[in-house]
Length: 326
Image 1 (cartoon, rainbow, N blue to C red):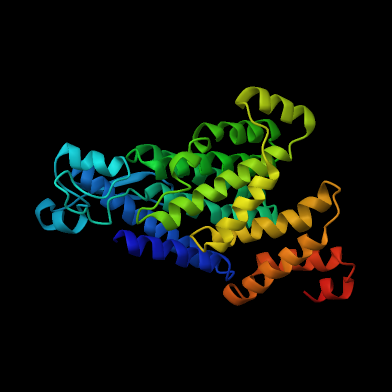
Image 2: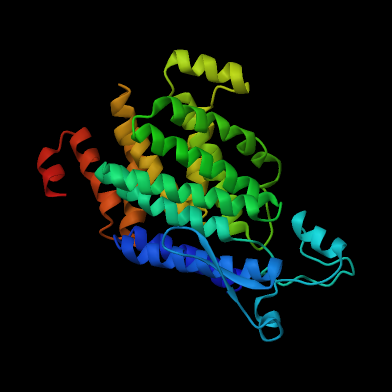
């Protein structure tokens, strides 16, 4: 698959999640991950590689001559290859590079892991959270193997942040907070290039960067005071909740790959998180939720994820009959 097809598949898989077809989403992301592994491994070794059901790579011999044009993303001098690593999209002689130049194995693997996270957090099923943790480990391994470019930095941050969230949901609070803080090692660089990234991978890079920065700021700001003091001492930041919410809104409105996740995170914060930490919802909070739910009903009608929070919102407004109806 080329880059445009990859991005379309990522968006299709995300749409399936919010259409309640989690199995279909898993198939899309797993297929994309396998194909990306096969293509990237051919570049590196002349063999195709896929992930089997246990997450281990298995190599298959291929006819190099017949597959070269199909699977080779780019050719040329070391300088041309370096231009890709540095986020440029032309070769040293000025010739535009094909849009298939980036290694998206880790991106598909991370999205594949997020399906398990969605299952686990909504059901609190420990086996789903364990599976998500395993898949995030695979996503991290595949991302580490990839070339160095800004998308790799984004993914490393998101994977570490997601792992922390999963571990907290598993009541492994020390590990969870550690991985959230560890994500700062990569997330701190995102404002330098990823947020303003303007290459063909913008839909995944900018969307992911905004979501990662937003969630990091919000999660850090919600830590209990003793942990927040320790975190600020270790990494030098405290987390800016208002800035995080602004970035989440930007991520949602721009309709990138992670737009639905950002929309869901916003309503979860306004409805459930504020209730949990003892803060009252404001008129502006309710208006923001109403706008997001109208958007969700148009783009993701009958999504169980948005419906659950919509019922909680009705309860916050003391409309218990509506909450029960939803």
